[in-house]
Length: 352
Image (cartoon, rainbow, N blue to C red; front, side, top):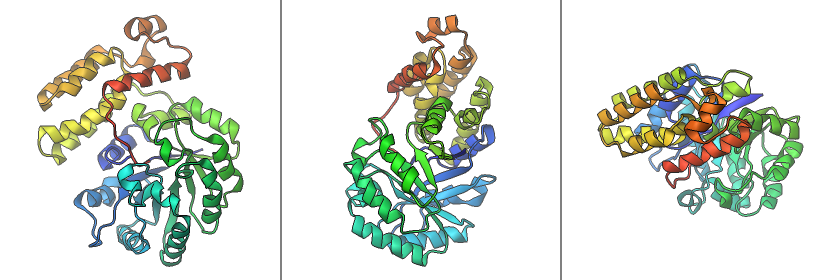
């Protein structure tokens, strides 16, 4: 089973990817959050840092491009090729309204004729491997049949399918029946994306689609950085590993970003996913969320790691006493743990 890290705009930048790679590993490909081509044809400072080879050392990184203009795509791909990349990914999955209303991301799916012409041009003129990350459609999963007909006309490196339509955003149950059409009829290798948050989720997916050999996970990994390792049969994350993972990111953000506010914005976003892994997490989630100075934040994190345990490391009786959550069955408990995230979560849509 191949496992890919999804590109989550604003979160899985090079600082996150490097810490994940060094502390947990387990991914075959690390997709870089989308590059938005500009009129001058230059990468922004943030985009340039994200794709620099030294910031992605050791990992197979794939930059993603978000555009509806073929010339912009080709020009950006050529720039990325100069940095040593031989594969790029086209974003046809971002559901954000600000993206969709401009006909980009999932919004491009609503213009199949234009999309067909776009793909024809980039595959004729671009001398790189091109994969596509797509939704099933804009409003109705039945749209996917026509989209797949278009995709099958071109030599895709692979077709990564987020099994929802644009209007689903990240809600509703993934539409596995329609995803099955991709598995059965795609001429390109298929990768599944959508709500893989436990190793058991991956096992169930494989039982449904025995020929499927590739998945992509995004939010599941944010909630459990050892997810890819667990899917491969490895051990869950330890508290020491989570501490090292945190410290690597925090120290790098302190070096790269200016001002406590910018640093803490990044770290609070991280903790909105990590906090539910710990016992008594609500108490510390509030402290971290309220922190306005790095010194206050550091004290809250130090106290959390010093006083609490990972929920998976706690015995049944202790866990129920500390969290109200029993240790079994695991998959049902994950749903309860997921509810704790509301203490932090912002109304923000990530382009995955």
